[in-house]
Image 1: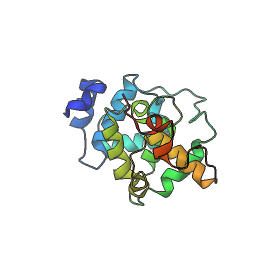
Image 2 (image 1 turned 180 degrees about the vertical axis):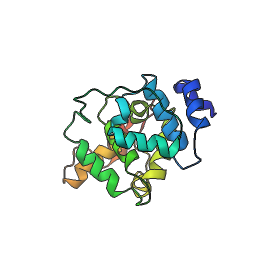
Image 3 (image 1 turned 90 degrees about the vertical axis):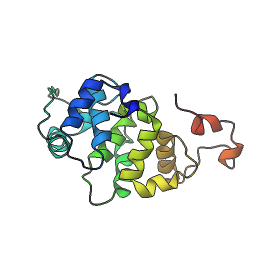
Image 4 (image 1 turned 60 degrees about the vertical axis):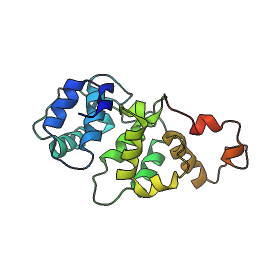
Length: 185
């Protein structure tokens, strides 16, 4: 188990990885699922996926692992209106050979208030950068200055709409530079 895997329950993470199929994203999904099951991060039951999609994710990446999850009858995937805009952005940059699960999970994580890696239940920002480069490679390349991921995604949405919410002519002159590019502890 990687050293950073201590953010979530080491036992649950290990149980998931014991069922892992060796596919890309196994480690990332194991971190996210273990954290969510332990109440860490901000993702709801089934990570914000529909039950059938969550079951398919588990069957694909962790066959035989069956966590107990109770989904409320009136479960709503998201609470923010920009969820669908974020989802569309992510899906447009996802390779066609991967199921859309990660796009839904990342969009759901953006609805919470902490750093995206924390809201997803990942162990570090480096894990989030890996997630972005594996699942949304063209989008990840656009973040060439290593802006914080949630801010970067929202900035992409603003640019699509022709909105420049920044007051400075460029990031290096902005008084809020550290809010966008500083550490995420």
